[in-house]
Length: 365
Ligand code: HEM
Image (tube, rainbow, N blue to C red; front, side, top):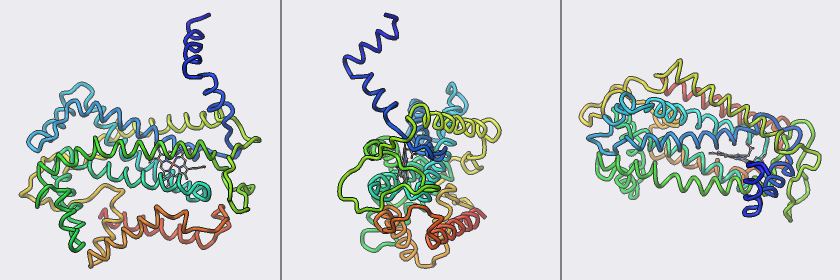
């Protein structure tokens, strides 16, 4: 027996490798009419892997202390071997990852793939998106720059719009009246030790549900889902579909390559794109910069809060929107999955997108 076969046999005896390959790759069938958009979830997964690995390398040199954080990040960029590469991958990766997760969610929404029995898949995904934003927010403070300091000051003041509990929540995040070294320690703990296990649990739920239920076919073209009431579980096995390997794996591999190409295009041709001027100045609690802008993915809600004079009302509206988003599968009770056959929902979606882009553009000015 050649070496490869021996190893395979060894593993088969112990973990049932051959059966795993057969059930998870060959017999696991995906619908014929899926497309590259079905690989976006995988991109999000790979994006997270890149964050975890580059983050581990950054942690070797990063010092989570207000006296040293800024300098340690500068050292990572200039002295530590390949430190610049891991930092670029982590920062650019965080932006690309958020874009990929948003795109994944939008395509799931447009194809109506959140409908029964996939409500919990949507909810676990929506919670992961909120966690992803929290990752971004907590990571933003860590380099201890002017931008990170003042952006965090604004964000941590938001809860104070609520009477009674607001002050408490704000102090809980800041560890005092102002953003300080204590805030940095708390955000570091959040970023590297509280959020990752929460995320992993949600991810396990998300993937387990997808595997249990089976992928949905795209609703464009032939109608796919049963219109009967769902009283018992029926796995979507797609007997007329293609095996997961190589059909969908090829699409996933292609998308992962595109993801890496975009990332390295930024690193090579626009290395300062995600590092504006204020990210090169150390935090100074006594000097407020002229403009403080959050990351692009927070621009629209940020601008919305600026436009609504009553802070309490503005933030309450955002919380309501977050709830509507997480529990959307229970609010949309129509059976039709194809958004082209749902004019009202289509227009609501288009208006939301236009509103979002206008607010983003406005917030950036
Ligand atoms: C944050 C990281 C996320 C990861 C790593 C992730 C991962 C995945 C993967 C690997 C798939 C299977 C392939 C595919 O359809 O793309 C998938 C499907 C799915 N995702 Fe996500 N996802 C994430 C976020 C979200 C979000 C934000 C939502 C919605 C709010 C969501 C809702 C769904 C649903 C409903 C499916 C099932 C699609 C079907 O059955 O056809 N996911 N996800």
